[in-house]
Image (cartoon, rainbow, N blue to C red):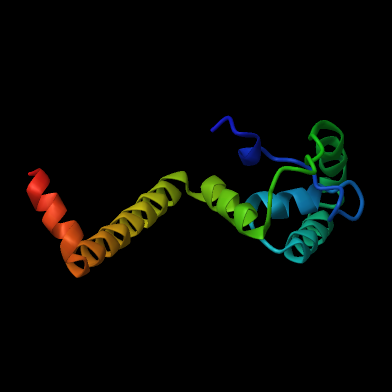
Length: 125
């Protein structure tokens, strides 16, 4: 998984301060408001110890490239890949099998409804 779409980036576009919470939200697929609320609660519970980590991650993490996702559907797909690559691969294989089955149905319909084509295929055998 060396794709740039599977890496963690801080998201300055949707971010409020350094974009770390928005980056975590984008990486995990969770709504950014929940990540921000979790960060605030964790900051109070830890006595402010999360603030240096937040700043450190904000300085070390790369900024998210603007061209990373084409649309929202692609963004959701890559979030699923990060969460469960094996499940995503199964889903993609399943989609291809479904497309292949539907294409075979179309071919069967076209060949059976076209007697001239059917006769030509039989003649070639």
